[in-house]
Amino acid sequence: MAQAIRNAKVPPNSVNLEEARQRVFEFFRSACRSLPTVMEVYNLYDVATISQLRSTIASEIRKNDHITNPK
Image (tube, rainbow, N blue to C red; front, top):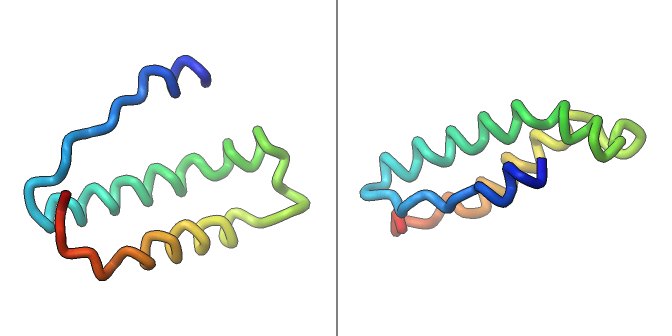
C-alpha cells in the first residue's frame, strides 16, 4: 500500500468543465469502491457504516459545486 502511495502522481488539470466533472465522478466511484477496504484496514465497523462514509464523501464533493474554473 505504501508503494502505491509513493507512485501516485497528480494528474494534469482539466481542460474544460465537462472533463473536470467526469474526473470528479471517476474519483467518487473509485472512492466508493475502496470503502470496504478502508473499513477493514482501519476497523471502522463500530464507528460508521459504508453508506455514512459514502454520504460524507458526496457532501464534501458538493461543497465545491460552485467552482467554475476547471483548473
